[in-house]
Image (cartoon, rainbow, N blue to C red; front, side, top):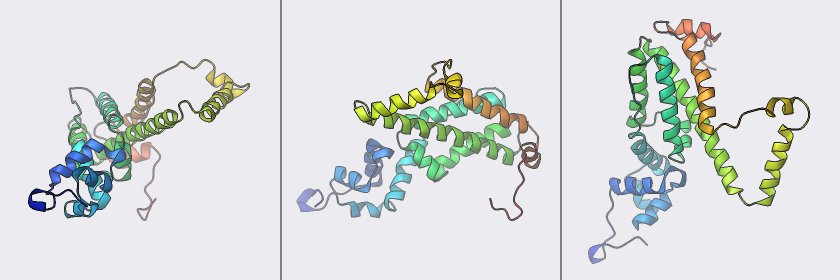
Length: 238
């Protein structure tokens, strides 16, 4: 039974209460039951304010996304896209569950739309066509989010297995495979030890250079696609 207010009346809650408690729980642990329990009400009471779990995710996720700020100093497209990718990755990693939220559907609400619109505007101001800017920004965002999601999963996997002898044995076997004789050993023996952040900068920089080489300012989307050897399907489907 939910918490009782004055004179035995059910506790009153608001959308702000739900958002506040949802942010406290975080997207990774967000559930209707968890929010309702903290507010002292039945889960059914939340349906007056949000459309089920999807609506709760959107309320909390968009609230968090509204805090994303991408600096935009005077610099070329490649430098700006790198800044965007690094900022987005760090933002996502600092908020467990955000990667899943963004990968499932983007944009879901006003905050997400404003992030995308801001990046498109930044590229248009650098001379790119709006449709090209949209494709490039979405591609870089998707890449950054996917990399953050992969790191989040790996970190969680290793953390859960810390102290587990079976897990430690699996990790040792994996490392042994990489340094065994043959091409894997030759490829990995002299690799430098780099952080997740440095590795991300390396691969996303290469990714961005490929995009910007194909999509210089002023080039229309059809020519960008041709430069990347991409041909749209005749029926518009994959």
